[in-house]
Length: 423
View 1: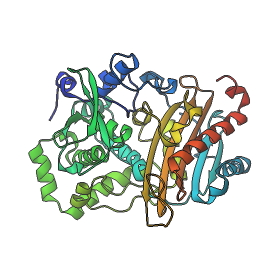
View 2: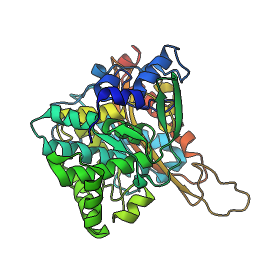
View 3: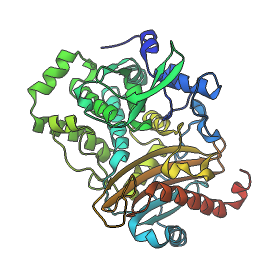
View 4: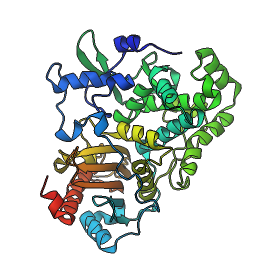
């Protein structure tokens, strides 16, 4: 079902605290919560004020490595690797990290530590869903960017039982009341495909991501006939077994990883992000390594993740215009443009004298972060990419990664003193 932009504007939802995509992108995308947050920056409605690094315009988000590093990642630099490991201190055995310095793109430097260790990607796996969706659009409309834009902007999605139960809240804009609202996604909530992608990445909503995964299956099955009616959707899911649907999902998610030159044994999202989706559609385990996550971001910056247009849209979706958390919360990065995704998964067990809590698991304490840093935003003098996983038990991993971000940034400033001095 298609919707007219005017109807979407009257009923759509815009942000409060959690946002990605440049704030001037509302009209182009139909992500109308962007307009609400833009008004918040002007003081016209309540809302968070953003750091200078979060206020780029859409045209300022650019791919930085087109025509560069075409042979892939350079060999690891022993000196730089040693410096990075020293930053990790006594917890180095519990970290995996890859660092690519592209400040001088003609002479990039790469460091990695335990970069082939496999972890569960948690919410970082939503980047693979983005890739799969843009690959599907490119396959159906290989020579028609405008058709891809129409699908993203004019396809209405209505949240249904696939959202499952999710504690993440998503931003809503109530234009008639000129106020911002944040709540959990509920069945019946409407938005265009752009908006659901935005909710998936910016608010890290599992419910929104599950709806995107459902649309991915429909898009792959119906091709140019997509979008289809609810009756046709139900018929598709009713006519295929859980196992058959699982095969469709894996083809849709893993095929793009392979076709873009990455290894599905080292990087994959293998299942739905909601419990309902998992019950309805079979899946497999999800995995990542920091090196393969780095390859993903390198391809994006090169414009080779699907194609240049898709790479740029994915980078825009990752642009962080929100209250910064975890690795991104470092004050050293306030003036930097950040293209960021993070995910965590922790477990607790009884332990005498220890009070377990969020991001402080004593049984498992995974935290993953990926970040492209351009500092200062708009005219970067420092430009580097970090992919990171950690499993440091009993410590607040959000705080630990924030401190690490500061140390990494200071290291890059030391490597490029002339550039850093101009910030």
